[in-house]
Image (tube, rainbow, N blue to C red):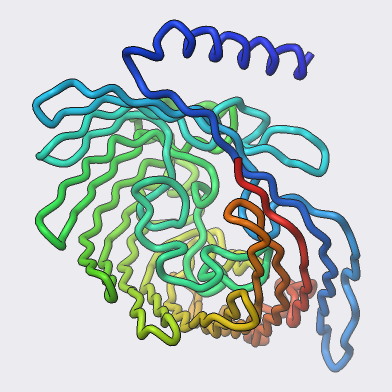
Length: 380
C-alpha cells in the first residue's frame, strides 16, 4: 500500500511539474545514507560495571539523515519570489518513512521572499537546532553537526526537547541587514507524530508551544549566532509534574583560519524535561544546566579530519541533589569520492558522572557509551 501511494504521489508531482515548468522552477532532490555501527554501553551499579548493550548493526543516516523532497519557486518580479518545499525522512535500512510514518514529515512549507527578507508558513526545523532553512545552531556550530549517529554533535551537552528532530508548526520570519540577519519563529504546537496533539488543541495551553529568535553575523571567515528559545509546557500535565515553562540562551560560532576551521557552541537552560541525547538525563519536574562544545576540522589525506570535545553540567530544576556531569569526545574522517558521494567513519566516547541520589533512582543510567560508525552518503 505504501509503495502504491508513493508511486501515485511521484506521478502526480511529475505531472504537475510537466505542466508548470514555464511558470516555476521545480526540483526533485534527496540523500541516501547507510552504514555500519558498533556500540557498547556500560552501566555501573555500586562498584560493579556491567555491559548493558553491545550491538553491531546496519543503520540508516549515521552521517546525516536520509531524505527525499521536492522544491520549487517562481519569480514574481520586482525582487519577489514565492516557493515551496516538501521533504520526507526515509529509513533506508527498512524503507519506512520517518516522523511517525508521515509523508513530508521533515519539512512542508510555503514562503515569500524579497528585499525585506522571507516569511514562511508550515513545518520546519527549530531555530535552536540543526535541521531546516532557519536552523542557527547545528552544522555551522559543530564539526559533527547534531551528531553522526550518536558520535559527536552538540546534543549530548544541551537541553533536550520533543521537537529536536521532528517539526513544529511555526511561522518563521527571516530578515537580512548586510552581514547581519535575524529570524523569529513561533510554533502553535509540538508536532511529534501524526496524532500530534493527542487530547490537546493547536494554539491552546493543552499542547506544548514554542517561540524562538536568533541574530547572526557572518562573513567569509567568521560566523557568530546568538539565540533564545522558550517553551510553554502543555497543561495540565506540566503542573502535575511541577514543570515550569522552559527557557534557553544559546551562543556559538565558527572561524575559518585557512588551515583549519574551529567551532564553539554553548547553551544555558532551565526547566526542560530532559537533557542530553544519547545518555538522556530526565526528571519530570525539570532540568537546569549548561553545556559547551568545542571542535575543529582540517583537510588531510584527500578528505577532512574532524574532532570535538563537549561537556555538560545538569541538575534537577527543583531537586539539586539529582545531577549529571557529562563528557563527550569524538574523532571522525570523511572522504569525497565525487561531488555527490562521500565515505565516512567516526568514533566517540561519552562518560557520565551521576550523583548518588540520581544513580539510586535510575540504576540503569549509562555511565560509559562507546560507538564506532562507517558508511557512505550519496546525494541526488
